[in-house]
Length: 195
Image (tube, rainbow, N blue to C red; front, side, top):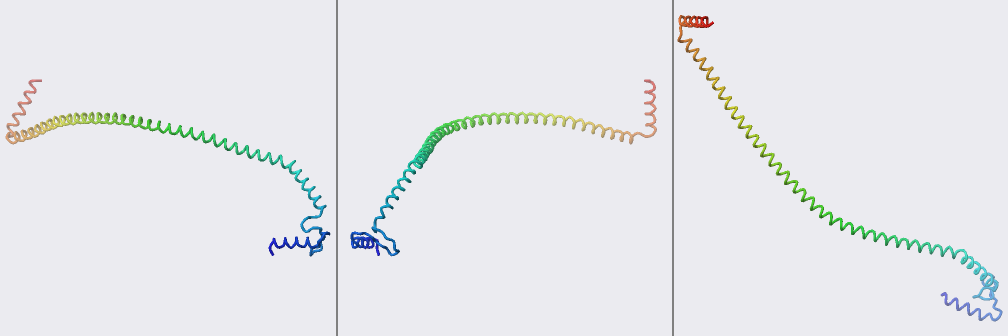
């Protein structure tokens, strides 16, 4: 049964019962009206509701207002903090953009300095290499001259030694014992006469 049908049936019973308005339901509860409660219930319920609403208004109202005000203050502080953070971030972004421009200028300056130092180092390197090459050439020329002199001296000494050996051998083969004895005696006589 729908709700509308049940309401119509209750209204019909109320009208059919007449003026006394007494209704007894299936559980044995007696009421004067199927819609309205008893008068005492209305009075006590109204008084209890007024007392509860009064107490709520007196005690819960200020706490509710305080909580709402605190929430409003918290939200306002968050909004103010967000606005200051946004302003700070905007100024930091501007500083970063300016620093980025400074970084590009600094990078260009550092690269120019590095190129200048590289050119100086390359020039020094070439100068040192040229000096070392000149020194090595001079040393090589001196070594060659020394080698020539030494080789020449060694060649002369070798020629002298070989000549002396050849002369001794030639003399020894051409002089007989008697001539050799005469030469030794004449040498001794010369040395004795000079002493």
